[in-house]
Length: 315
Image 1: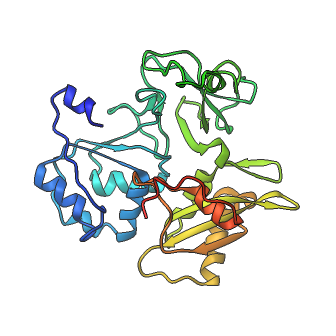
Image 2 (image 1 turned 180 degrees about the vertical axis):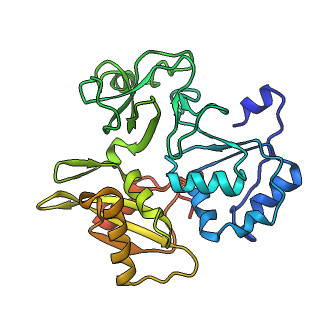
């Protein structure tokens, strides 16, 4: 984010503070003022602006934008479409980048001008052999949930973990003999990969693995929902149950009838197994300073467990 643009002579615009203060037009006024060409943000920020509606970006001239970027977490199709239509005005490619600090660069992304699929990160970048496999490292059927791996080393790969060589070896031994990124994903018939979230975020309901991103995407597709996060809770019969934390859009009020309607919506989108047992309406979600939802904090608080390291907690 710093050295890359500088190395090719690009100017980066860095803005301090909350994206919606003093008003929800703050970022768009910066884009207009400085004629920003590439806008790169997290899906959580996109969903935040969805909550304020499409009128705010319409107030500004965003015609300088050429490419929109997404990073940090999976972007649900509803947020992708809103981002494309309201910020990119239907003219900008969305580069949904999947990578890690450990990988040293982008590994999966939709290249501008290639066909785009809302909610999908895209295909492996040039020279990267990424795949979705089962626990033993074997190929699986298209659109089945599996483990995201990188099959061969690449130039920018980490070489070891300082002082912890055994930790580094685990990266290459947990799933077959491949580098396991720690994420679950699906791959469709065209080779497009959809990131579902961390493996430890996957909820096992009655023997079925359900990705948090899938459920959150279904929740956010309800007209009343601005943001959502889900966790798994121990359940004596199902193994785990799903609890959802939901932020409503302006103009909606929490109620039992609304919670019921949201559950019915999830049932329609994903089926009965993915329906949250509980929905709690909240005003905010715990996030890192980079905008990622800290589900482990929600889970720890819900189960009365230690919060762990919260040094990156935004508020």
